[in-house]
Length: 313
Ligand code: HSE
Image (cartoon, rainbow, N blue to C red; front, top):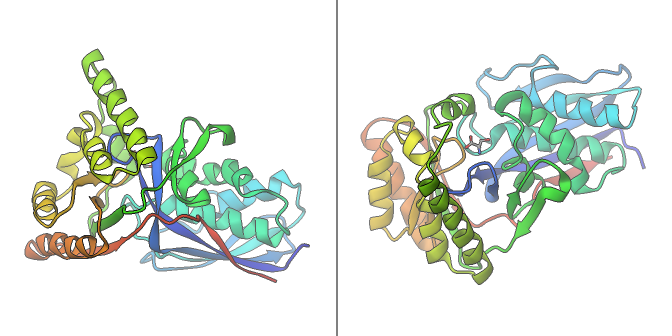
């Protein structure tokens, strides 16, 4: 049944899981983006308001990821109307928490709900990718876990290329997001274009170890595999303030690994206990407090379900 308005939530995501550049990602419990959409007679979608971006996001329909995703979906069903979008940003911009993916996903899920759910959840992937591609390139390592929840392997951008992987029961995450923007495009520009055969063997071995550890529910081996990246993190580490100090205190506090979340600057510590994860977030925050860099923290588990429809009426 078609509706006149709908609202959807989309969570934060951690892409790459260290060694799985552009192919692995996971959804994280806690705040995310909320988008409400309202049917409008005119065929194009527009942004009515954005809260929580400090005026930084574009409102032009061809530049905002939410309108791009919404319009891609509406075009696919040959709708002769558009939507008016209200966006509440719960995620900091350019922080490595999949902020643009969350807005694209929340928009697609809300518009799908408005239309009475003509598409299954996974069928929304192409529309969310349209939005994501506008800001950070055509890869699904954030949008897939954001849309579907859990830990995902995205070996391509087709729906068939997405696999949900098992979530270890005792996997807890501690995240710190220093208030420095690292745009994904800049963080990709510093990456090597070629790697040696020796490094390739190491990286593929580490990804295989990681997937095996997920299937066995072994958080310690998972953490070790995640942190063993020899290609992406070494090239990006200089973009993340105090990365080594944060890693040091996190591990001293019981974390098993610290990796860059997505393109950074958020850092994600891997823990096997909820209290340890909470304590580790506080220790990581103290490092940034010491150097007067504001930061946001969160700790929790992998979010099993992805984006949620909050309202459709
Ligand atoms: N895999 C991406 C990167 C994540 O690390 O550049 C951001 O979309």
